Image (cartoon, rainbow, N blue to C red; front, side, top):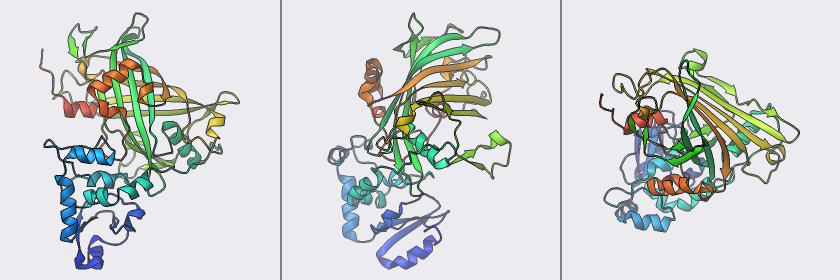
Length: 420
């Protein structure tokens, strides 16, 4: 499927079809070819097939003319995006990237995306919203079993279902020469869905939120706050909660090592079999450990963000522990595996604290578990989300992007604080 050129498909399809070749590289599922839509055929070209008949072009254009609210209602998808004038945003890019690990550039154009939405919505639903095959026989040395076990813990192999994860914890200040000091609380939730990829791997599509809170007298996360008196500078600062939509990645049988992890050639990334360090606590409980240690260029460079930036590099680590029952992993009826766990994070000072390059950093400590859905979140967390970011309470139903870290989003969405 990936060997023919875009121009050769243009020639083979003849004059009845208009083909646009671009440098984008998303991947179509093979099932789309059966609907008369050409697949992507090379690593450096894309063939966007548009209907050439006036009747089909008119039908596609009519979808744009329909008010967005009507399309949202008829499609049963209240999350469809609308333009400022109430029209439906073209969805072709998201329809494509739902099947791809590569990113694509969305263009405001009629044709493929809206045609697929109108003509092939049922087919896409049938293919995307399906149960992804998984293995259940425990084999710690098998990349396939590790992949499937991790996916069933992260979310649900039934793509029609989302998984909601809740974390609650405390942020400690780590400063040289001082005892660690709890100074903030937080409430986190993730809404996640798994989608099958044409190569057999799994795309994890996800939204995640961190709401910052005060601390109760007992040192537990309290009420969600929008302003905060920094105990180290005595300055009242505006709290910037983390609203990450989306944060997606692919779950496969290989682990790709970043250049900073091995000091090698960035053009020759090292791929390792996906083998996690599982621990057997007893005859019934297994522990999955997933750690990530990063040291990358800070999106908030000190010259532009003197008060927000902790320095030229961002040193970030995340350590997760998932406690699961052996019988649940072995149960073929469970497309999602229940767990309880912990999430710990080491990160620079939160930029909205306006600590600049003051020595020290933040340490997050929390517990995490799954809840049935958004209704299972703590009442004050759910109500704050319903008021301020209701779209975050449901998982994506398709792959879109790009994904950004919280520091990248801060750099994109905020402006540098004035000097004092």
